[in-house]
Image (cartoon, rainbow, N blue to C red; front, top):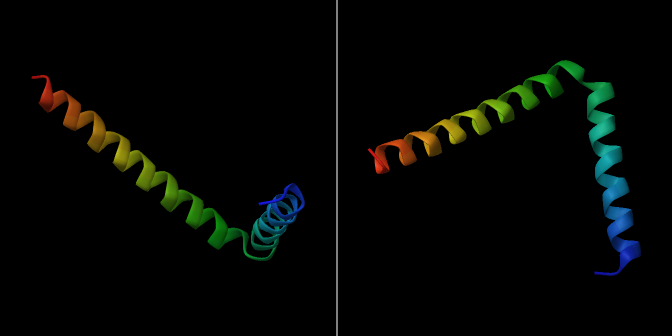
Length: 55
């Protein structure tokens, strides 16, 4: 991919994120909260796996 296409895609994604943050802040906050919850659950599952592996 050329650098111009990458720049256009990055600017487009940033513009889309800003649009949703400005137009629907509550739903955007809920989405971020859900994603962080998934990441936390995944990290806890990995830690549990390694604890049980080496116990």
